[in-house]
Length: 191
Image (cartoon, rainbow, N blue to C red):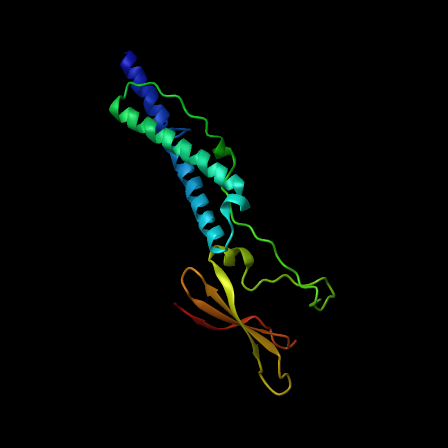
């Protein structure tokens, strides 16, 4: 009787009820691994863009250390259970699960020179979208001036973006001609 009660309690602790629902070690381990892997991806982004992770985002580093400690504690409990299934287990404190998943953010720059048709304080730079560009490691690699015709000898810019992860380039033609929609993709070259 007592041994069966311990086995049932451990089953609930590790995998949840009969349907595998509720808080349990495996669900917590999945959340912790997701949190840790997201932190690794953010560290990779910070490194690519030249940020020192130890000074730029200390909270991420501290959270990743706590998360790795929790992953190791749960893994140790799983290994102990496999060796001695009648052991008693206590859930470790896992405050990092309350923090949510970290995510990349960006700040938009506005031009004081270009006021736009409505006279506002500048237009948001949106080609490509900053957060998406940051996550795909896309950067502005070339700027050129385009001469389309004699009426507008210098009427557009050709911007080339390079995806730092794949090496793929995309050229965007941005025109100051009010009759041109601007921002059209001229060419895209895969790596």
